[in-house]
View (cartoon, rainbow, N blue to C red):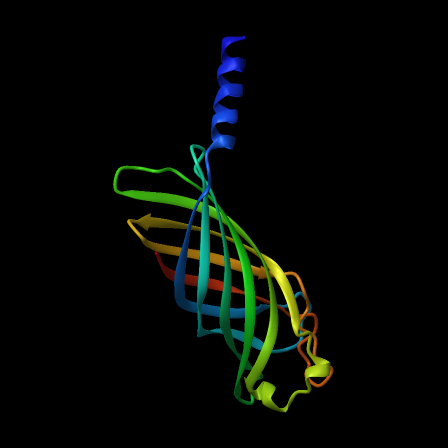
Length: 191
């Protein structure tokens, strides 16, 4: 009974405290590739791109939970080797991830793990995709990322792996049911 009452009082106290929020800027590297379930006779290689944008972090007091929605410009590059040559592809997205972080506040730093559902929309293309019509590509993408990071004062360093859940599709290229996937390494400064 005492434990239940203590838990109830703790939850009410946590709910009554105001959430703490801070804006930030974020940038980093993308290493993107394809996830292809059928054999299309090509080799996919990761290639580096970048991402940059803004973030807003809201902490829920006492329980270590934080929400960090972001608005990012994210360039995803990859190479396809068809045996006769390697072709580079670039797609730039406006991406909106929602990082749901769970961390432990220690004296000087805060390690955390997070899940990150995201939605993105392709805004430009380059490389071999320059010749591909927008109508043959799915411009809207969505997926989830899982990662970990550490926050030291106002500096946040994190890494996550993203899995797209939407097929890229192309009527003009033989890429089958390809979905984007890849690793992101990020640094953010929170004000």
